[in-house]
Image 1 (cartoon, rainbow, N blue to C red):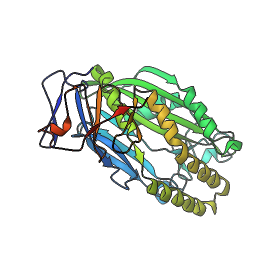
Image 2: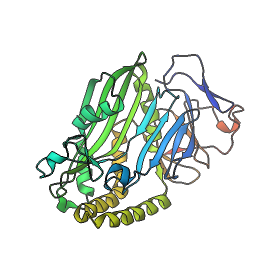
Image 3: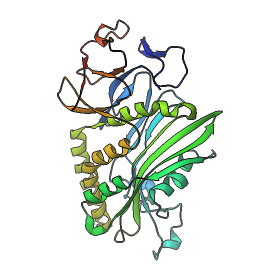
Image 4: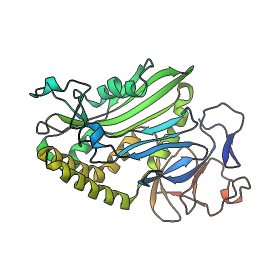
Length: 348
């Protein structure tokens, strides 16, 4: 797996001439803020491109307020402008199934009702295969490789559901598929949770915690460790979370004037999501790749990181370096020209 070293030259990472796409012996990452509202920090490999971030959906243009209560995240880290290697977080979206509704004929599938796309309910496996993959690649031929449900995550969703009287149902899955794009065969892995909000919410359901990773098929496995490290590095901004929850309640209160029951349900569920998503994400990434718990020598805090290298270094700004070289010390790396790195120990 671990093949070629990376060299920092003028702020860019240059790879030595070995097989392209394989996991490097040395990985240099920088901590960046989500660019729009600074909602979270994340580790980004130097030289990679960050796109998107937090967005706010307009209830007027959406024809209703259901998807305007909460912030949406559509954020991608990719190795080059074409996204040859990338990890993509997609927004949670409220859908509505109008089956059995007296207004079903007025709102066919593909239309919008109170700001929600009208779509028949699906489990997570079907959602990925029939909706998500087609949404991301509408003009490409998708070939399914593997799909599996994740009962541990579904159980966690049930256990942390704060509105159990709604009789919500959950499904979760991770699915691998391939497609050809510009002459390159890519492999993509998608994970999501589907939350069916139960019989008292007029057909409302949503996707949650949706993340997609991709790389060329021939080297996909080599990059799983990096995807794990990036996903594990996400840290929410507590001030942003507090302001977001307050804003959700205010926006929900406005919507309550016309949609009392639906808005109360959405507001309560979203408050619970902020408290449980970190637990769900932890379980999700365990299903993707290997990881380790490290002790940060600067803060004494436990940090999750990749175990695909023998040594992990971190500085007081949160920048991280991985290497297999026992003799390597980034503080004496003339190409790096950075100081303050300390080696992390593994939590026993």
